Image (cartoon, rainbow, N blue to C red):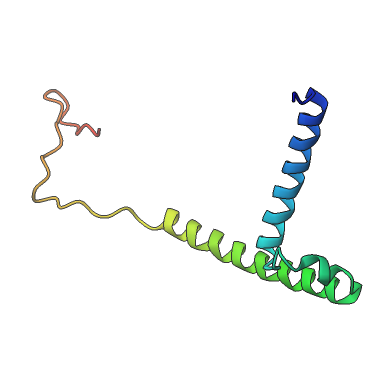
Length: 98
């Protein structure tokens, strides 16, 4: 039995939508198995989504701050005793930097 291209496209779209929904639910810390039961109570659903979004935002901001701090931290100092002396110009005695 051969499937038409339209059916394959529809299944791909459905798969992408399901995958997007599951990743969003995981980010909001909502159980993907029982989320439909939670949506039946609108007030509880909105509260759960709101708190999940707030927690996700706090975590992402903290992760961004630590990443920024790591990038801004000074590079480790090299031991100058083991490093070679920088070359100097024989004519003007300026030092060259690599």
